[in-house]
Length: 206
Ligand code: DC
Image (cartoon, rainbow, N blue to C red; front, side, top):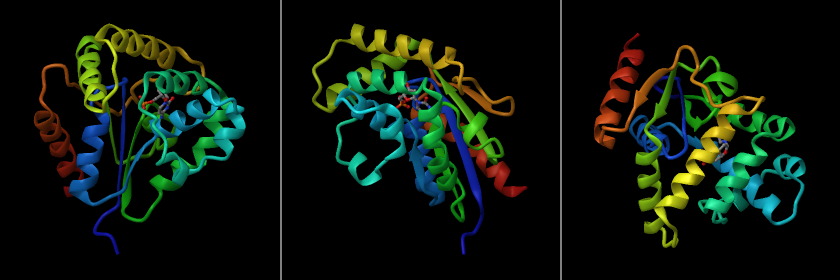
């Protein structure tokens, strides 16, 4: 039997650090974590291979997803494109909601977790940072993964995706009204985590 039930929704812009923070929360509180961006990346990857986005989303396969290289800029862009399609979003919704409903809770990160997937989450965060800082972080991450890419290209990709993700009609990237907003531009991971865990500890004491 789990000690508590904790559902944490973490939304934010591309490469804002939400993934790193989500993983740390999940580890610290021993709850499962879902990076929902990977689901859209899986569909984007399939579209680049010539599949139909709606049926690819319908046939989401987590074991296959784990074997694919989904972190390229090409896949990021394709993911952001397929994420505009309401039936793609609808096909991925149930999986995300069931993940969040596990006993003990879960941490989910994405763009619409606090607004659409888990509107009743115990805690919601909205993580952002300036586009330049996010681009540098993602650039370094991609270099570390062995990709050869320019900083300029990464910045353009981030700006393009922010624009597309924020302006689509279905489930746009917007903070939930009850989300705690954190701008990580001038913060280290440790500082962000400290701020986030203060909120979680306070919630758990309630
Ligand atoms: O978090 P990420 O950068 O891996 O996400 C890739 C794309 O997927 C992002 O540009 C928009 C889309 N996405 C979404 O629309 N909703 C989510 N909950 C997560 C990602």
